[in-house]
Image: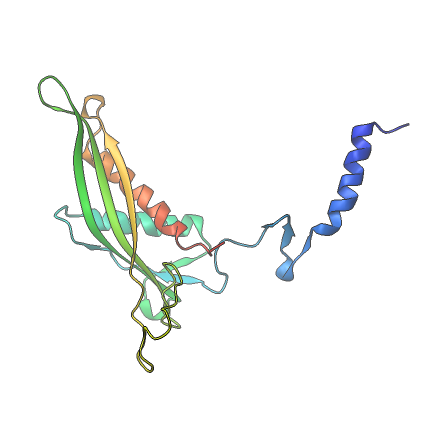
Length: 197
């Protein structure tokens, strides 16, 4: 039986490209710049997450955000969250620096029709074994900027922001917007824990 022209092209293409794909060390597969290597550093096993600090006047937000971050770490990463700082490989520190509410639209009675909330958090992820900061860009200071024998200043925290809107007329409230904000922020914070590309 004769193969169709398309099948022959496919077989030739696979024969040419198959040698380009290969196994890497550790049994991972790589092809065309894509790999099956994990997105997270396999040397890190545990994370300590203390309750985030709250610099806003909205009480209780720090507990909701910390709980959401811990849940997201456990669900989406191979890391295990531990309660003992001394037994953790890394520590994730967070500070809620702003929670703003902006009115986007009003009705004819001057009541809120649509409102937006903005939540901003400063995050620092540190390696407890080496003291290095894992979050933020790895930028070396210019030559001569740091005196010899003096440790360079730690990098600034990474600022993470999320927005959520709510419409009271359809039964939403600021509580639902806070929940959306904390879930979005938890996802963004955990995404910072991935290895750089």
